[in-house]
Length: 121
Length: 108
Image 1 (cartoon, chains in turn red, cyan):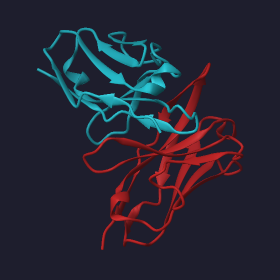
Image 2 (cartoon, rainbow over the protein chains, first blue to last red; image 1 turned 60 degrees about the vertical axis):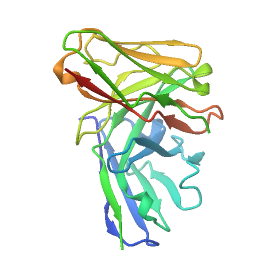
Image 3 (cartoon, chains in turn purple, yellow; image 1 turned 90 degrees about the horizontal axis):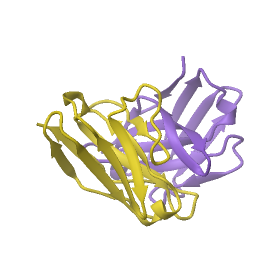
Image 4 (spheres, one colour; image 1 turned 30 degrees about the horizontal axis):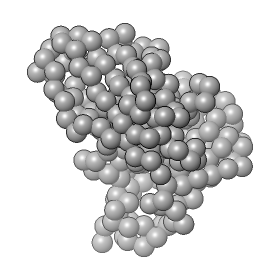
């Protein structure tokens, strides 16, 4: 079954850290670019980070630069997001998403169900 | 990074046609994609690369693009189409991705 399953969310205090995981199955994980996208309560989708299929390139949104780190372990079919120096405004559901490509266009063709991160004192 | 602009809310009578639009400079270089999200659920891709429908998406959903505007059209809207719709593309740098603010579609 083709799916992505996120885990690792929870309630943390401001300034603390958390690591999210995304387990992939049903497709050749090591050949796909992967992303994290988040959604604050009642708000829209916000792209967070991307990592190339071989891990050679990574980019973050400006809002998380220097605090969040995306990584992957292709031997374990797992994507990660390390969240450091968490802020209240980082409270959101975090989704991992698989990228597909058509010519020069890129789109997210598979999403996980998300994991909720709540940052609160 | 670029921004994508969507109308916050749109309504349509049952069975009628509705167009949801998305504007942004990055759409000069990249075709837009569209996602449907219902409450409590993950987003689902409904249109990719301007006008392509994934398997399982009804043909009442269609996409188009002109200049800096991408459009999602639902022809004969159904009650189950009531949802939030988001456009997205890569930004002008090519190394970031952006989403529109979302459009809440109400089917009357």
